[in-house]
Length: 336
View 1 (cartoon, rainbow, N blue to C red):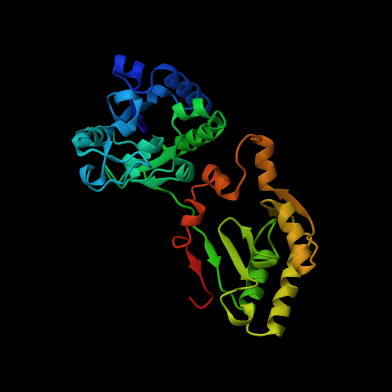
View 2 (cartoon, rainbow, N blue to C red):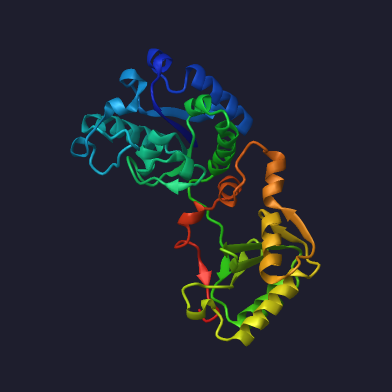
């Protein structure tokens, strides 16, 4: 089986049947699996704890740090899982090794805690990572537990999207991150070269800005999915608040940016209504031929879901969590 569905612990009906994901949560999981194109029979289903905690509460298994399982953090505010339950993690490790799946879909905070030593499922869901706890070397895709969907129905479409991603990830065991080249800290000559080599001949151009107050701190151009350039604007850490060595150079950079934005090349934005208006206010540049907005396109398909760039990345790409990627993205300077 290429997929393991990992839950938290037995509920009342699960305890009676001795199986994971039965009863109402199991029925809802079956419906979501069907929508994602996954057969339940093709999955191995288990829990971190294959018994029913007192009161159906994981905190009943927790204690103070000194009595917790060594090397595992607390499960949120519930405390540290008592070391007497270490055997459950050993049983889980044996199950996973025997199944040898391509992906483990960790459903809920407890499952993410057991596989990654992390909780805060809303922040890490949809991000594929390698397991670091209980058993290492397996690909983990965190998402919400079906029980959470009963408490907050808006989580359902997000979970289905994650399951669809899980099906894609089940085709291979390794993490396949996209390869790309990003030019950072460019010189004026680098910008001229990048424009000549990549932008002038592109079919469409992705554009994004970062802002601080009323200033644009940088603008990014991506003529293809595998290459991009980030052009600094106002950089607070430098004296004079400018990255560029002189006003003359800064004017020439501004002229290139203006020329690119006003060419008829179709342009793609994320939340373009904000970016385009901000570019005009800050630089007095009108953007020509803004063709699509990824945020609005996603909203048209899934109006009930989140629409941030980080969320879209977690659903449609193999990227990691946006804010945790700064040290992991391959970058290039012209002199490298």
